[in-house]
Image (cartoon, rainbow over all chains, first blue to last red; front, side, top):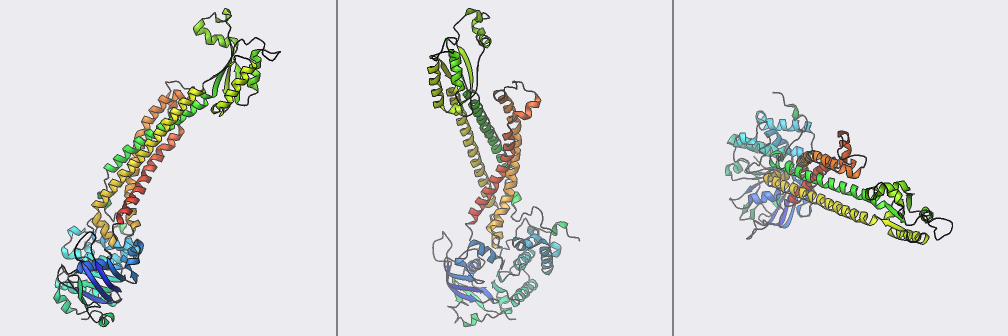
Length: 238
Length: 315
């Protein structure tokens, strides 16, 4: 569940207008949203808010039932474990193997190593990287790195999954496979937000969208829509 | 292909943050070793100064001499000599552990270097000399000694109480000041070591900033990240501390041997090797491992504090 009420974001120490302004939106638990808008519209900033890399500078943001402004650091750390993120630039740790990168969220959560081994092995098989499990990211291709990033994002069965241009480095078949994975997770109850420029992908998988322009929501938000449609929380079709 | 065994258990020395390369693994132990070496010398100074102060307090300050001129003449109180009257006064004083009048032959031995072998036959008007040892702690009670001197003078007018406690006390004050200096140096060395660890930790934080941010975004608590740094820093600082303490050992042994004759009269300046172990005060044998442990503890505490303060910059 994501709820934004008059949320604004200004990065500390930077003058000028807010990066994000007056965001009002609601995405119910188990909802799917495309996050659309031209480059520089604030998609990445909104995702940063949602994966708790920044706190809103004004307004109220509720994520998975927690009010972010009122939560302490320890609570935010636990909340982050329930949020999976596929970063545009993958953000893998180069000194760890593919296996250890995917295992990282489980180790941080303190899972037993036996379970970690089983889960990570299965996940790497699923993304087709089992044979590359002991390879470090710099030796993997762009597509392989992206699959490692996706595996790391979903290994913890997150309640909220955020993806920033997740199909950027994938061929059509792999992109389609990824969409099937995201839809499967969404069907199982995960709230999913995918930022993309890929209009063909959006056309193939129609779903409600949050549309940003110059830091403001122009579609999909409560102010932009009549709000009722969004509240019903349609899942992705197609 | 069989999985490597390390996959079954959490890999030992797992390094999620990649700190093995980020934290100065040579400079930090070397610097901490130098600090521990200095700390060991200061600690030795501290222990030695306190031993010398105690020695002077218990030795020189605790002994005094009573001189009774014309000891054979009758005292104020009839029926006894002045020497006996003085001894009676000393016998009635609770502040004295023991006292003993030197025999005439002992007195002659003392005078022989100045007067030659014929001192006894010169019938010089020698005073009676009474060596006195004060009871423990009595040396610090100057008023008691003043009263004793007054009573002696009343019983045998002209009797003198020769006190060494004033000089001994001044030397003891000097020793205590040296001890305080050594203590201050010890504290400063600890503070500098903490500052060194803080600088090294901040350099490590800067070098691994991206990894820390990623781990933070994956839900790592401050405690998890700080523990990763603290583990590594504690190991490096402990290593340096142990090396520094070991390096200080031969110096302390040498200094201990030099100081031995001052503290123990039964051992001559040229002590045999068997005295080597006894040369270092027992306290120092505890201090050396304690310094290594303190280096590790300073490393752990400083790393924890530095990392946690730095993490406050992340939401």
